[in-house]
Each structure stands twice: as structure tokens, then as C-alpha cells.
Length: 69
Length: 338
Image 1 (spheres, chains in turn brown, blue):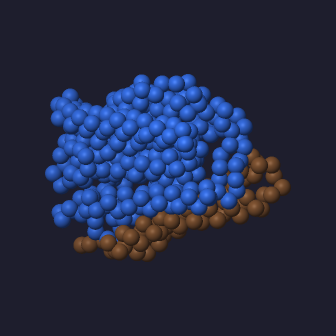
Image 2 (cartoon, each protein chain N blue to C red):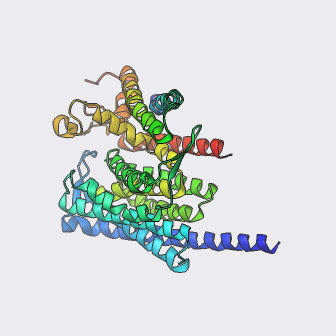
Image 3 (cartoon, helix red, strand yellow):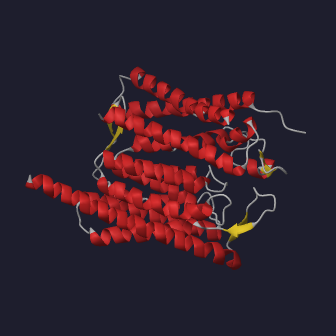
């Protein structure tokens, strides 16, 4: 039960990581026009989200129980 | 005082009409699902429940009940509140897009549409919503503000959102009650948020769709008598996107899509994207009823990996995850709108 709750909590990692990355990208690309700036944000957000899901999966791998005989 | 009474009376009549339309959707969905669960296996519209030790045969394409219920509920609502004002046109556009996506799902369940054709058909289904939202051009993003996309909003963002969301919800699926449960939580949340943000007609549509899925869920819950098929899953995703776009709560709809988006990202990053089930096989059931995950990354496998879990408990865990993202979307909306 506790492990299931931990997995549920871990599922916040991709959202949190990609949100921070997107916000920083928005600030970094200040010189761009609004629409291009948003496209830049999306281009940063997608790999950040994918990276977050990989972190989620790796941590789940660390928590995983060995297969039963 | 008179004005206040008029607003209150309008809100009350809208509330009564929404409740009546939602009740129609609930009864229609339950009745049609019950009929399908008995008749469809005899007609050959059936699938095997591979997550049970005895692998029973169950009715497929149960999403047809949700489609009929959504159409019936929306029709009842429009008959008693017909007008050509903006909110009603958006209601009709969103309802048409959701039901047309359901029709694409029916075609997919019957004929097995090609993955190359399906997205184009869903883009076609999103045309009513594109037309209804032609005057809309911006998306609100918390901490950043309104971002103006001009004509790109109705012509690109709307069909892209509907198609992406419909295909996402088709991924996180395959366990008793999962698709309908996630749909009920997501659409119910969008309905409440639409009401709070001042879009009562979008909230009414959300309410109708939520009760359509709840009616179906009574027979789809573990141990399931009927499966939603692509009709139910595609429509759930399209409905989430349509409600988000219609109410201007695109960011909240994205948050509600995160569990499915995570599943997509995990499957996409694998060396055999979306061919894993053919290569590595399905989840297996152990003698004690717990599930043994296949060896490729997926959100459902994460729960199976960390401890032995039955199908019912797996679905409860996934619905709890969906509820957590619903709470997150609600919190973000409340914080940034006030």
C-alpha cells in the first residue's frame, strides 16, 4: 500500500520538472515574440517531461521487488 | 433586487435542466450498457478478459452506450435551451466533436482503422469545435498570462489538442474500470472548474458526459461485464480536450492528461515504440490473482513492479493518481484565478 502511494507521489516528478524547465525557458527567451517564445517553451517542456518520466521509471526500478520464484 | 432574482432564477433553471440531461445520460448509459453486455457477445462483438485466470469472454465496444447517452443528454439540453448565442454554439460544437469522435471509435472497433487514418478522422471530428471557437485566439498559462495565437488557435491548437488527447486516453487502458473511471474523474473535474470559471454551459456538457461514463462504469467496474473499446477511450480523451478548450481551461486539461502523457512518454522512449505488446506480450495473472507485468516501461507496470497487486487494487491506485492530478488542476486554477 505504502509503495503504491510512493509511486503515485513519484508521478508528480515529470510535471514538476517540466514546469520548472518551461518557466525558466520562458524567462530565458525574453527577447522573442510571444508566440515564438511559447514554441520555445514547448520545445524545452517536451524533453524535460520525457526526462521526468525516465526519472520516475528509474526510481520505480529501485523500489521494484525481485520476481518471485 | 429584481436583477438578482432574475440571475438566480436563470441559474436555477439551468441547474434543473443540467440535472435532467445528466439523469437522461446516466439512465441511457446504464440501460444500453446492460443491453450490450448481454447481446454483443452473441453477435461476435466481444473480447477476452486476459487479466482473469479463467479468461472470460466479455462484450466489446461498450463505449457505444456512452456515445448514445452523451448524444441523448446533449439533445435534451439543447431542446429546452435552444438559442444561437455564443455559449450555446460552443456547447453544440463541443458536443458534436465528442460524439463524432465516438463515431470514429465505433468505426475503429468494427473495422480496425489504420493508425495513419485515425488521426485525420479525429481532426475531421474536431471541425464543429473549430468553427465554434473561431473567435477565440489565446491560451491562459499560469505565471505567464494570456498567449495570443491568433488564427492558429482554432485552426491548429483545437484539432491538435482533440487528436492528441483522444489518442493519449487510448494508451492508459486495458484494466476493468480504468478508462471509464479516469474519464469520470477528469470530466467531473473539468465540469466543476468550468462552472467556477464562469462557463455554466460547458459545465453542463461536462456533467452530462461524466454521468454517461458513470452509468457505463457500473457494468465496467471489476469484475467487468463490458469493455469500452476504442469508442469509449477515444471519446473520453476528445471530451477532456473539448471541455478544456470550450471553457478556456486548456492548462488544467493538460494537467489532467499527465498520467496518460507519462504512459505515452515511457512507451515512446522505448527502443520499440508502441510495438512492445507484440514483442514482450501482455500482463499475466498469477495463481493468487496478482498481476505480473510485462518487461517494458508503462505506468501500469510501475504499480505492478513495486509490490504484488490485484487488478482491482491496480485500478484503484491508478484512479487515485488521476484524482491527485485532478486536485492539482483544481488547486492551480483556484490559486491563479483569484
